[in-house]
Image (tube, rainbow, N blue to C red; front, side, top):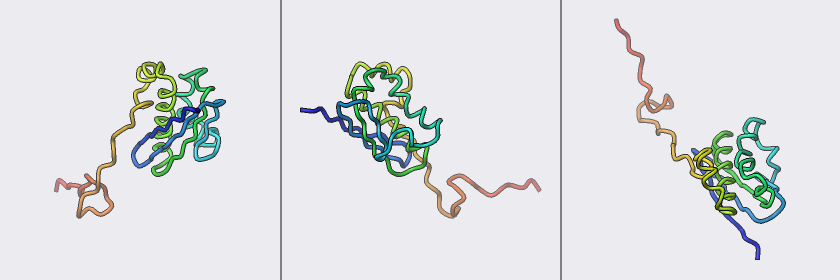
Length: 133
């Protein structure tokens, strides 16, 4: 029987759901290879948990579906989902990931502040500029 691991990563409005199973180290995001997701910098940032895991990352296939949010929010959600999947596959990685960057395992809980009434689309804290005279 194959071991299937399901994990979730969140950041702002982005939600990434991953399904991991033993395999050959193939990582796909929205049914496409990981190399096709985002810019080079975003791609390197997403691959950090895979580099930290080393040879363990070559023993697991991960499929990630990500929706909502912007490019960086999605990237952060994917990174967290991949990190959690690797730790569930091999518990020895937990300390290494937490010491490197806590957001590899724990989703960032910060959200945008809601807009306040009577300001329209100006933002939650914007007020009219004060004049001295």
